[in-house]
Image 1: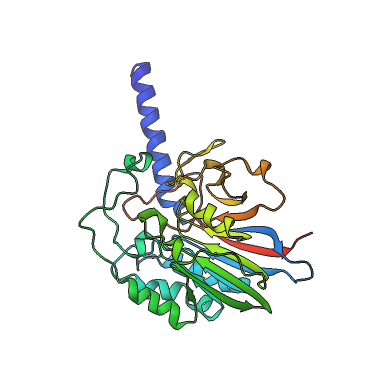
Image 2: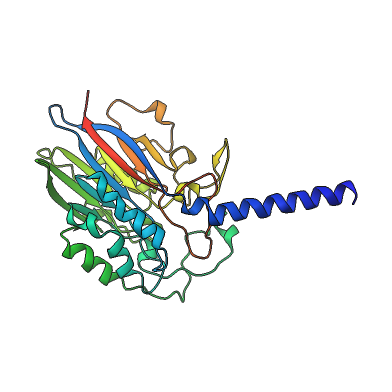
Length: 310
């Protein structure tokens, strides 16, 4: 075997090993991220918020279901679900089972595009183009209302183009939410308005963290914004990070905690003014069943500790 043939054979073997790892190991290596954000008024005790996003669940994913159920042992004070729960026509019972014990806690939710329409096979390279958000015309509709009914029957607050309040551990929290901006279902004009000055904190919630949505939330005074959708890039380059965010958010903020302020236009968090809002983007827990890989980007949920400002 000549040098070129050996090189090609080695590259092929390395690629196959990487794909096997990404599809069978890392995408099932669920992890819990912990972050702390100083967003509460002085004098208030810390609040534990569990952020769950992008389950993309099919009923056969028992490991994922049991892992999500185990998160209840964290005893969160509040659960925030930022959508894309479904990946199968029969997935609603599985999602409600996965979220089961968490549904007994205070919670809020918004929907993502994959809570409305079933996934389809498509060219994975389209993810890297401006055409990534286009919805296929003949996608099967999912039982969205069954999912919404299950969450609402548990007392969770639907924030799809809605505002609302919850009292959590003695704190009056105001929520402002929109339906999925990724497929232009957001109607911020229906919920626009200044943050309630009597609330301890105003929280913006969306599935996809598009700039127009982040700016709208923070312009009206939200101190914390919570979103998902990006999958953390899903396939990342070690020591470089995400290649894309699947929206117009910058790569610096593809997952984790950062700062956002109106019209910052992806400026680095290091330039944030003192009164900038905090933004948390979850890398999520799943993938499309037609692209079941993660690399250098483990699936995650996040326990956020909200504490008083210093």
